[in-house]
Length: 160
Image 1: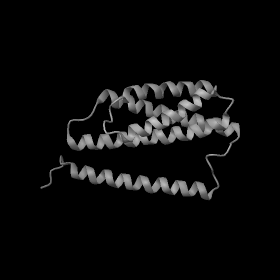
Image 2: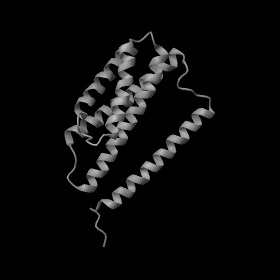
Image 3: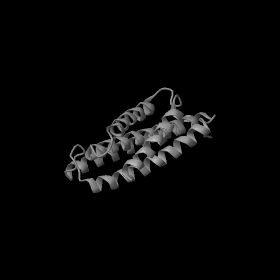
Image 4: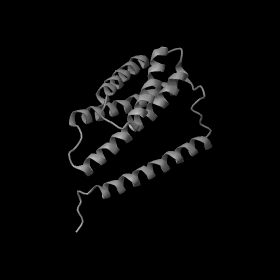
């Protein structure tokens, strides 16, 4: 009989999700190129503001999930801890990608938005990516989450 507390099944599930995620991201990138979308191009203000509002809402969801994660801490069971760490890394990677897109969109609005917001967005994207790949995932996660929440508020003010 199999022991379901052993981390091997969890590891296999994590590997499968990682492979599927990589395939989906690659397919999206190819689709963007085929459709002629280039993130480095200047975009018109109206659609950029709509996109930024959506990206801001997504960041708000990340903030809620990260706050819950900070409060809950890591599970004791090895398989559960592995699954939680993987989910946390995916969340932080999603945050990095979302902030990267927000940075590109904010560049299209510059100089109508303050340069500090644009730069802070870039820095937070890099920090989210560092957290996603850090050996000690929990180190500084609470401070990062607070900064992310503050960024979301600043973005809302800039879009108002």
